[in-house]
Length: 71
Image 1 (cartoon, rainbow, N blue to C red):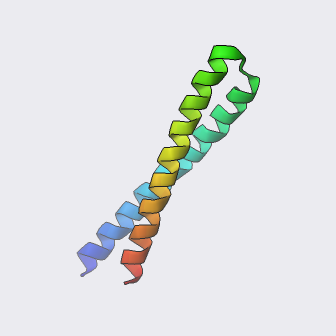
Image 2: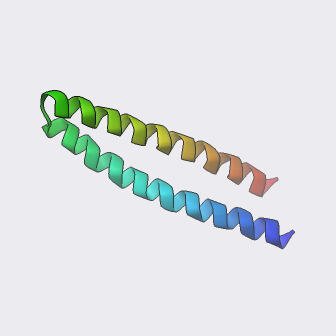
């Protein structure tokens, strides 16, 4: 049982680290989008959208793991 708990903890820690990085990337790209013009803006908006989608998926995984941990 402790192995599965420690595995859940490891996965939760990895997701937290990934979410921290995605948050920083999202903040930086959001700033770049504001400063960009024309085609650059569209390209950066696409990248920003991808980062936001990854962040959402990772948050969902994190919630699932938290539920599994508390079960």
